[in-house]
Amino acid sequence: MGNHLKVAGSERSRQEARGRIARRVALELKDGDVVNLGIGIPTLVAEYVNQDITVYFESENGIVGIGSAPPPGKEDPDLVNASGQPITILEGGACFDSATSFGLIRGGHLDVVVLGGLQVDEEGNLANWIIPGKLVPGMGGAMDLAVGAKRVIIAMEHVGPDGRPKIVKRCDLPLTAARVVNLIVTDLAVIEVTVQGLELRELWEGTSVEEVVAKTGADLRIPERIERFQ
Image (cartoon, rainbow, N blue to C red):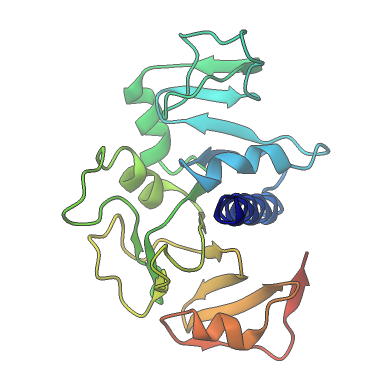
């Protein structure tokens, strides 16, 4: 019983951290933005968007104007996002073919893309599609999204399940795209990718600079003033 409660508590804590990451990412979105959300933590971002602004969510299978998930029992099998999850479409939304969708993506018409990450390095290189030797579904549209978007935000946990840093000096996993990441939001901090390297912008309440530095595998620039986020 004790171990069961410990596992349940750990999972609850992890889910809360994922929600905090998504909530912080949502603050980066602006009125009128066209946004694509990757799988995992990024999909949670839509739940936290400020109701005073309009954000147009796009999916690479050919939809723009995605609404909230339908209630149980009201799913339409013909309305799914690129991950196969049931969706709704807002009034004024549109469906189109893959050629049009990837023309939009590759043409630089997405304002923001939010993706998960396996590794991000100090040059903004992103690895998020494969760990050699493990079975994966494939690249999907991540490469096109990362290269085509005006701004790329990575939403991920700061360290992996093995405790190793996911923010590293140089990615050693196969890259999704080179020098594309603008901002990293983790369960510990918000880090900006600049021409001078990685800069610590914000800390979660209760997190110290020392903890973030210890769990980051790359050099961090530490400004005199660091914001706190709850």
